[in-house]
Image (cartoon, rainbow, N blue to C red):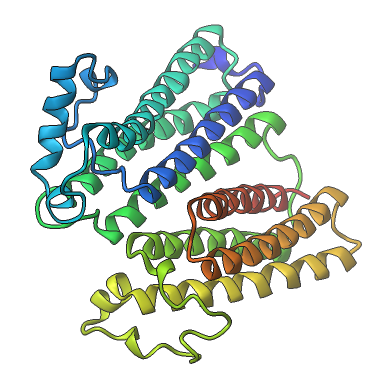
Length: 343
């Protein structure tokens, strides 16, 4: 193992990890479009290897369509769908799964090459192994999510959707953090705990807000209470409580939308407030100050986009843009948290 101790940083490794993070971002975007188009349950079997090849004949397409016709979503929502329409939703889900397989290859092959070339910093080897394992776990969680919509539901369970997205975002954040570690190397000076803690708090809030957004999406809660800043003319919606703490928190359309709104307000106040404070704090390095300001601006834009998406009743274009914006905000917040760990 000592032969790997040439350096504590590697720019090629960093570029590779940033590229993998970008692929995860693409997966999140395509996954969001898959959900928005109602395509997520179109492939009813999990075939990690053979599933890479789509139906290649009329008979194969008919067999896939027959599988879909057996599940509640077809019987209760899409009964009478044509084969041509089925192909439209099938390709979204197939593309999402293909990206997942591509992600595994794009991670595994360079990892082995970098190990063989001895340019992967020793301190990052086990981190990369854990990242690969996390990617594999994400595939399992994805199928666990899909399976929730194949027997009794017409869509996937919202809590499983949030878990699936949350795990993808953890992988995304870990890739970005590790990429910066590879780019800059080990820290050689102490950080300022107050600012580092504040930056970590913003990143945590951005992540949690993304999970709340997943619950909104999973419950199709963006299609109701489309007024703002009130909800059906009230500050607190009457239908928040539907019986049981977890049932209300995870399955009440009023509750998940109210919680998402409240989380947005808290994140916005924190991010913009810290941006103003950092802009005035001359003890901060210029890069760190700029990242605080950039995060505050991005959160403000994302909140504005969220309001526009809600009031327009969540059209595909704005919803996809809003989800992409959330991932960009999170990337900036994680970069800020990483940078704030260094003087």
